[in-house]
Image (cartoon, rainbow, N blue to C red; front, side):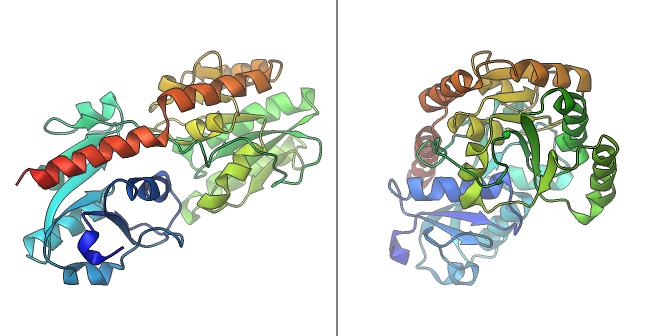
Length: 337
């Protein structure tokens, strides 16, 4: 793509795998079919339309959209514009249900448009945000055979994402310690990064697993690259999202798209797509309710529930919808001169 064709810039300024990074990686190729868009920043795979950060101020001077999804990305967009290095219209996507601090409020006041992923997000943001739910690429997150964990004939129950208190990983471990002894054909997979500040948290859970004698059936696995995530979901029979707080929460949607039913807590947007035909919603921070729901699911027709979940995702939460809605926002900003 010629630099003259670039109308939108999607920065990613976090080296760690996160839902935000996954969103950029998924959306940009689809949006590139509709509008001139380039990603920039770090930790982005080959194949994306990409422009190095250092080149941005040297692009031909014309109006472009800068779509930030993190505070540091907002700040960089504000600096590029205020220093006269680029002509930009600034967009910020909010996925947090929490009210923002002073610096964030100041930065959002500089935005030309704000996108919220749920009505709850919109309520805590200034102005009049447009609500655009996240979607999932059902052509990538699609059912397929997978032996990525090499666990033989065992059926797998997965819990993916950063291993930390607010993700509720400890509730998942407690549920597995209760349920697995009576369900010998199931094994649990915990996949995600344990950062140094959560080392003690992770060790406490491993000690609980050891005390239950389940070291060979509750397995901690390293984080996989974004491109390998469909294989991770496709290895599962059931996905569990025990979070205590989420802005949106994309992993259950990805699991459902791979025909994996879900048990999730009532946070973020989980209730919007986890329905009775494809899973269960339980109160957050309620380990007894989580354990009961998972236990009941192990005796249901998980295959049929997974099929119902994928049908729901394709009908209402396809990534094409999110891409189209965002491109509409971009074009409005570029035409409003």
